[in-house]
Structures are given as structure tokens and as C-alpha cells.
Amino acid sequence: MQGEKLSDAIAYKKLNLLKKDFFGYIERNSAKVDANLPVFFGHVISTLENSFPNISDQTYDEFIDSVTFKLLDASTNIRDFEYIKKVILNVLRLKKRKNADIGINIVVGLKLLKSGDFAHALDFLKKYSNLDAKIGTAVAYCYYILSLQEFFREDDEREEAKRNQRAGGEMELLSRETMLNLAREKPPVNYLKQLDIDDPAYLEKIFWQMVFLGFEWFPSERWFIEVGLKNAIHSHNAEMRMRLLDISAVRFETDFDFQREMYFFKLETRDAGGAAGIVSQLIRQYPDDLEPIYLGMKLSLLTTKKTSYHTFRKLAKVKGMPASIIELFDVSFDLLEKDNTSAMNRIAELEREFPHALYYIIALRYIAADFFSDNETRVKRAKKALIDSIDHYCTEELKKKKK
Image (cartoon, rainbow, N blue to C red; front, side, top):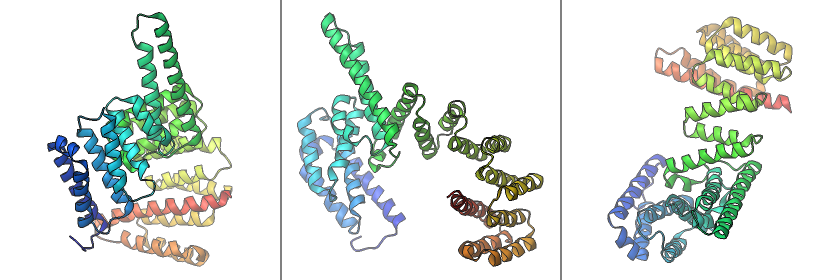
């Protein structure tokens, strides 16, 4: 493969196959690998560089992190800190980026967390709490579990028991402080690639436990719902998404962002009546905001209800909705109703009236052409492209209107 230029998709697939080969070797020869770390890592680097000479430094380092986690996961020496130091030294010599220590510290910390060594996991993870919400919640979890261990530890000596209880109380305070700091700093979630090399189910369980505990401790902090929704969408967890939206409907009933999320969830689950209820509520709560009207127009478009559409269209004109948005919806409704002549005439009018949007109108012509196809698959793709493009264009136009 030396010198061969691969597409991103093929290279990604081949890289994963190489990773699996090393994982299998580690599982079969864990003791041998532990006894010959420099030789093993030398083989990893040699194979990686020969197979992927044009690999980016980031992907290179992430590959090393994945192999390192697997090595630690398979090893019986995980409680031996001399061994861990040896692994870290070997890995740091090989990695290419300046912040190479971040990845390996996170990898080691996650492995210690997974093995139940919460105190030492903190040593490696706590300074990275704000890089990713899942690292932050993992740190808070370590403190919280240590507080429970101290609180419930049996001890016949009264003074020792008091000291343990006090230590447990301090650990719980650190857990609360970590969660409160996350709510203030608002780190991204699922941002770090190193999270992919751990057992996702294990980290997911920790994340959800601490998010709900954080919300119990600080019920006015909306970030716990916000970050939970982002993770639920990322992981396609509809059950958790619905649970969070139900909480937000009670605790933050006038919050536009959460109501918007509920609207999208209703659309995805084909609950048109529920989505319509959200739109009506938003229009009552935010009578001067154009977005609820836009959401109503979009719902009417998706359900192709003409009466509802004209009601929202009339309201949009009265409230000062940008004319380009209204006319774009008119085009879209014609296309979905298969009134091709009217749709093409309206597109021609859009070109004359809004020359600044020509970049989009040209693309719209191509999308419209696919609506006339005899190929049903092509028509379905055109419908999706139309709705997605409307969303992007109208969202940007409404943002400009708010400024």
C-alpha cells in the first residue's frame, strides 16, 4: 500500500481493520506485549507508517491512543503504577502532536475509571473536566462514588468513622462543585475522540447518572437538560430524549429552545397534532417573534394542509416575515402539490425579485426538476433536499431579521 492514494472512506475502513488486527493480537498475547512494550509499539508504528504514509498527525495519535487503551484493558498489571508509567513513557515518545500527553492521560484515566480505581482515575482526568461533558461527569462520578465508599465503610472506632464520614462529605462537595462548574463552563459533549475507545455503554451510564443527579442538586440549571438532549440526539436515545423534554416542559415551560426541541421531536415521531400544539403555545408566548410562525408554516408544508398554510401565511405577512421566505414556501407548496407550472413560474419570480439569493435559487431549480421525475426514489430525495434547504435558508434569513 506504500504510496497508494486512498479515498477517505476506504482509508478509514482499512485503518479500522488494522486496529482490529492489533486488538486481536493484544487479546491473545497480553503478557508478551506487557513484557516487551518498546518492541510492540515499534511494530505498531512501523506497520501504521508503512500502510498509511499520508495519515494526519491527529489520526496517527488517535490510533496510538486506541491501541494503548486496548493494551491497558487486556493487561493484568493495571494496578501496577510502575507499569502504567512505563506505558505512558513509551507512548509519549511515539506521538506526534504537541499536546500528546492529553490523549494518553485521558486513556489511562478512563481505563482506571472502568476498573474501579476512582482515586487514581481522578489524577489523570480531573484537569480535563471542561474539555468534554462526558469527562467532566466522569470526574464528578469518581468524587461521588468515593464519597459513598467513605460514608458506608464499616469501622468500629468512632473517631475513624467520623473522619471517614467527613472525608465522604468533602468528596460529595467536590462532586457537586464539578457539576456546577460544568453547568457554568458548558463544555461540548462527544467532542473528544478518546471517548470512542472506551466502552460507550459504561460512559453513557455514568453520564446519565450524573446529569440527573446534577439536576437534582441544582434544579434551576438548565444546562443539564441541554447537554442531556445533545447527547440523546447524538446517541439516538429517543427514550431519554423524551424524558428530558418532559422535565423541561414542567421546569422550563417558557423556554423557547426546549420547546423548539419538543417541536422537532414531535415531527420526527410523526405527531403532527403535538407539533401543532407546540406552535400554538409558542405563538401565544412569543407574539412578536417570527420563528413560531415559520415553524407553523413548515408544519403545514409537511402535512400539505392548505387551509392551515394560508392561515400561517396571512399571519406571516401581517407580522413582517421576509418576503423571500413567504414566496419560497409558496414554491415549495406548489411542488409538493405537484403543480409544476405554478412552481416554475414562482421560481422565475424569485430570480427577478431576489437577485442576492441567486446562489440558492439556482440550486432550487435543480431540486424542482427532480420533482418531475418518474423515478420515485429521486422524487423522495428531492423532497428531503427541499425541506433541508428551506430550513437552512430561512433560519439564516430569520437570524438577519433579529439583528
